[in-house]
Length: 290
Image (cartoon, rainbow, N blue to C red; front, top):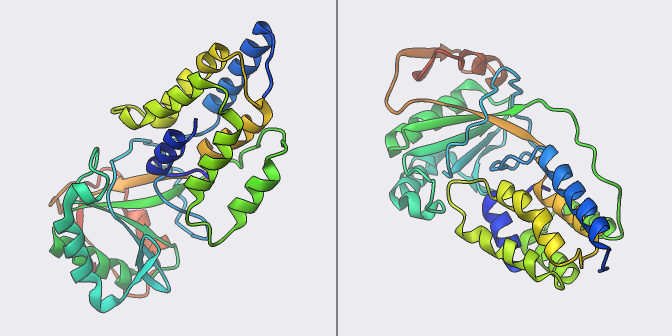
């Protein structure tokens, strides 16, 4: 249930027991920080639940490229933020998105010329080309293709009393307000730790650093300062659910307007096969149907 960075910010800004000896508190606080630090927690910008992206273990670059619109492409059609886009309206929709610019896409770190394509492996090449051409015409000339990066399933920490509630929230298909509900769950469990509230409240002002890393770095010190006056097992459960990256992704980005070659395939070629052409040293290409 790893949330995107914006939702993590909303959750942690909204948030913010049992006392322990100083030694016990320090030990438990450092153990929690170590657990979260060693758990993959890179920003999860793309919702992969129920998706079947192409796996690319060869793409090892973890760099993020900032916020931008994500066009989901499946056999069922096109969608953005869960809202279907009719094929006939795709060009108009993307042009509107580009006109809205960086401010619409969360401002800091965003790029008004970038678009992400999250494409299922069984999507046919003609649909990919259609989306690419519509993006180019709209001025979204920094196309970035999202792939799944294979990783081992994560082992969650021991369950606590709050996990049943977390399971229910995670399984709820209508839980559009998950961030606010998680914030409420968290606030009832750490309200007696003012230093932790201050740490979470500082997330909104973080620039140039991953928000998860910011929290993890300051977590142990904040807990020690309030003498671990929280329910540690439940805090651990919630923090792990919020920060752990269950699905890792990698992005292959085209340089703007660099079209060194033309990649052409028959219309029915699947993205799983065609996407193999996206590999270094390719910096960009025009996509076409044979």
